[in-house]
Image (cartoon, rainbow, N blue to C red; front, side, top):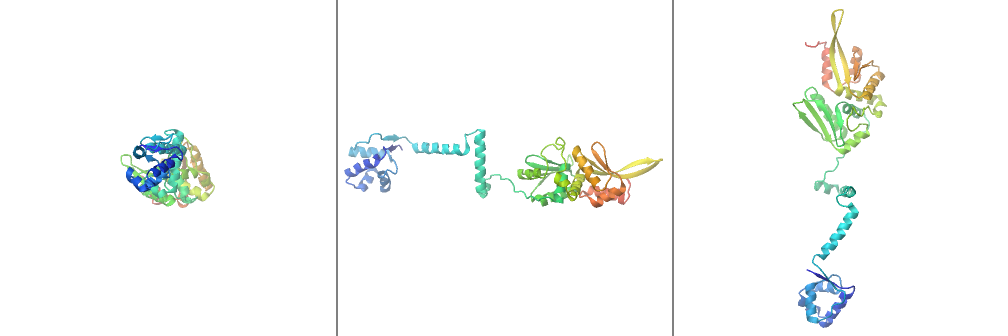
Length: 339
């Protein structure tokens, strides 16, 4: 219903005149225009505007002149007023609608609201970043870094580690346990039977940011010439653990044959393969520092000496049982290939 807007202080004066006409019997006035006395009292004090219908009834009876400058406000005038005020406030908080600046301000405002009431945000279905446990420097984390440099990968929102679902079945369980132990987080394993792969996936921007802080890089490892982080190389205990993670993922053990004076000999070898030159050099340097005598080709680091390989499995060790099984079969039990 349309409302009546009197000039400043004129609404009280108008109702003073109405009171004189009704001899200040305000109960009678309220009955005449059909409103309750509380509402009438608010009108008399100028607290609220009166409706146009009530004004017409009073004017037709009392013939009191309407103050100059009185306005009739159309229906929904208050809605327009408060919508305008709301739109202005929204602009101040969030910026212009559908603009980069508006989206930026809106996002920041939403983040502030979420931080103030995280429980409410979760109830409303807001996806909140996972809290990630920071394990700190340790041999376990150094080994995980080696695993990631070998068979892992990082995107802006996710880490993944791809293993062979057949030959690395036991090792898959170890890597899953290591991730849970380090970061206290849930993970997913995606199996592709037609490719014989098992892909460990952990999503979370906070986890990616944490791992970047520990020296891992997002994107193509070869193009970025990834290397072992400096904090790992500074402490030999960490370097050995990282070496194990690298060898357990990008390494192999095998028997090879050669002939001397028409006699056939078999030797056992370890081989680490990677396309990042800095990483190959670091792998080689760690072995040299620990008393081994490896040699390097284009993309590989080899170890052939029997006593060194025995020392490697004793000192560095492996968590990938496929390497240990081959070592025990070919070296310890001396079972030749094909037998």
